[in-house]
Length: 127
Image (cartoon, rainbow, N blue to C red; front, side, top):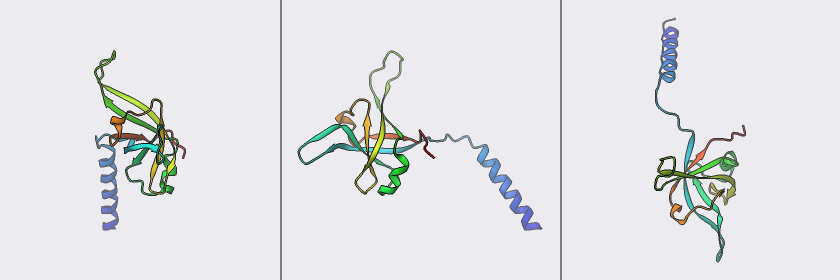
C-alpha cells in the first residue's frame, strides 16, 4: 500500500512538472549543408546535399522525405525591418547510404551556405 501511494505521488509530480515547464519546444531538427549534388566534372546547384543530425543510415531518411527545410541568413534589414532572410526548400530523396538527403530550394543556395546550418522542419507530417 505504502509503495503504491508513493508511486502514484511520483507520477503526479512528474505530470505536473512536465506540464508546467516553460521551456520552448523546438519544431525542427538541425542539419548542415554539405554541398551541391555533383558528378566528377559537373555540379548541379539546384540540388543541395544536407546532413541531418541524428540520421545515420538510409532507412532513417524515409521519415524526412517531403519535410520543409529553412536556410536562415542575415542580410541588411528589408522593408519589414528584419535582418533575417529565409530560403525555403524541401527534402526530395536520400543520397547514398549514410543518412544524407537531397533537397531542392526555391532559389539555389549560395556558395556561402556550404557548411552552414539549416533547419529541417517536422512538417508536413505523413504519419
